[in-house]
Image 1 (tube, rainbow, N blue to C red):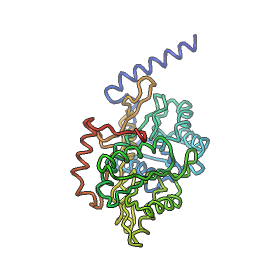
Image 2 (image 1 turned 180 degrees about the vertical axis):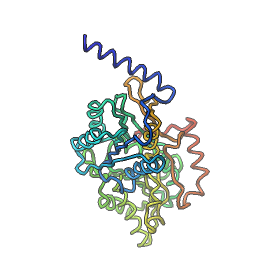
Image 3 (image 1 turned 90 degrees about the horizontal axis):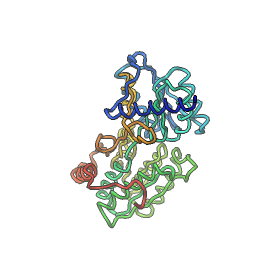
Image 4 (image 1 turned 90 degrees about the vertical axis):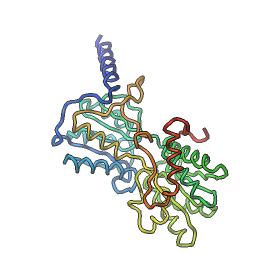
Length: 357
């Protein structure tokens, strides 16, 4: 009888959640900004990676500046599930809420800890697998932004040979690949895209190995590639280094950054070769979760009503992904890029999220 009652209570809670989520938010206990304590758990590389983690940090910084909230930042170093679980659990024990986990590798740990602390709000970036009312999933249509980066690459390449290097061959980074290749091919059918990954699953060191990235990109350059898009976290620095060295040797190679507008953090030499960045507004996602904690609400659009998964998807329609124009190198292609974006938003163009589809 107790099990049935518990199951019934869960069904009622989920049903109520779905009903209220249709209007955008679920009411939560009100918290004044001065009482909100935000915990953020970065993945390997942490603040200072000039990419994914830094984008999350920018969202936290913006929220701290606006509301003066208290915050604690943690970074895993070993990258194990047990370490990630310990980091989340310690933040919860110390009274932080919301606790934002940066990266899909936190999915297992956040499932465990969110059950241990049902009154604590959690958020996770790049995962929508945790069915819990106190977990907000924040996911992105990376393939859409990467499609626009592909348009820019195709229009900028002189050789017609373009490269993509992902950090680890996993479905998430294959979304970047699929969209990018589709954008290139839609713009210039004759162009070729050389696809490589720093490491293969389950070796996640590919997110923080700029030396290996540099070797891969140099190999592409030797084969005539003159635009390289890297989606690999901290490893991306190797792409920029390879292009800078190529420039010193008299070869012009464009690079495309990822997640944040990497032109803004690049060196003077790197900026000369940084065509654009595929911006993934992780900063907005982090800011949204914190804003709603301050306002006493949680972000709960319906992502999967059958599974009971709530959160928010960031795509071209809400500015969640796109390309940057810093440096001015792709300003002359803005009309073509805008046309491609409009076609995606209208549904005229369906961007693949799986390579070869």
